[in-house]
Length: 117
Length: 113
Image 1: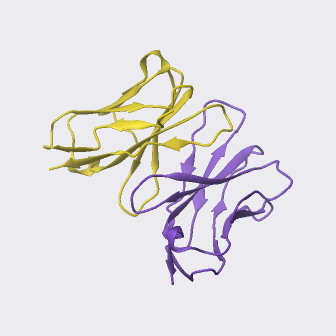
Image 2: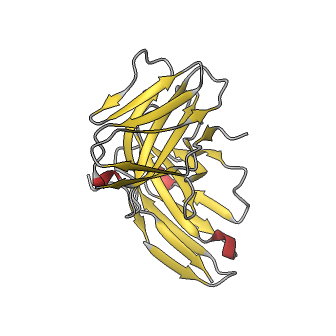
């Protein structure tokens, strides 16, 4: 079974509008971390935001916020006031057993976001 | 701090040849990861080191793939007897500590003809 599911292959949004990118995850581990990365057409992977499973509040980083719904196992990324430079591929990722050394970050298949003027 | 660097940026090889890629992580980072990414897909985990110890290896990684991280500094990923299905972007990432974000290199694009 897939650990990270991103069901939206592509999303389209107008500049200055907000957009939500969906991510659901599957784990029975009580300690895990959820990450979002951005990959523009240039190819570099850019870290956006992190949410720990024990964090009480939803994470925010500037225009990025993470809508963390633990019971539903979802960790949607919300981008407010979209900009043309936000056009990129966005990946949700999860690492289980956050306090143990031997676990890796696993990525979803990604969502392509296109922002138009 | 110059970030994670990977060498070469591009590699073209013929099927059956061996190739080796190098990754230099951020100097104080003790964790190093290798991922493989094909067009339009998410990065696929290959293997992971903490210092010089290889702690996890994907079941998808065939015995033609081997990775090392001598002295816990740079890492190499070798692919023996390359196949056309090995064509992909190979990404290296490093992090400091268990809860830290990953910093990625620009990747090595491998094309197997």
